[in-house]
Image 1 (cartoon, rainbow, N blue to C red):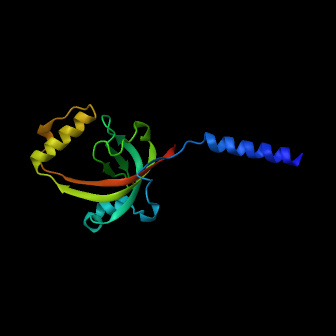
Image 2: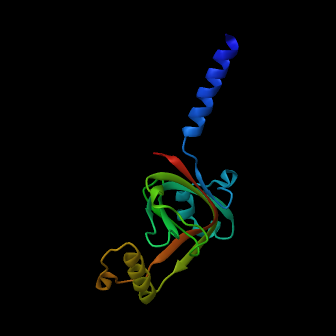
Image 3: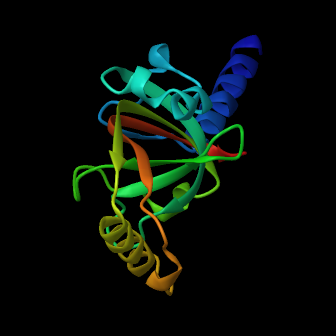
Length: 157
């Protein structure tokens, strides 16, 4: 009788584990040993430019065309863009609302006004949004993470 109970309990455990959604991993998954608060990265970008780090945040947007970028909302409400070369990784739209960890290197660009307009127009086009370039009056700084590994946690926050 104990063997039957044990087998039943084991079967229930296996079935419950099999029904759990698996995390989505790219490049073997993010390295949690390199985790740094994204707010710290945004405040001290030059300190992190050449280091491989891992950041975390809630996915708020994903590239609708190619899945080549996603935006992470970090703890203080700011956003950090995670961008790969088209086709290297394809982030699914289902990642929106999930927590993601991304391991890679920080990129920091200072764009003049013309490049800022082109960049914002491209982002608007990718999202199917309208863009009014007359509202852009100065260049912008662009801080993003170029990952070589990403983990998207399948449980909603």
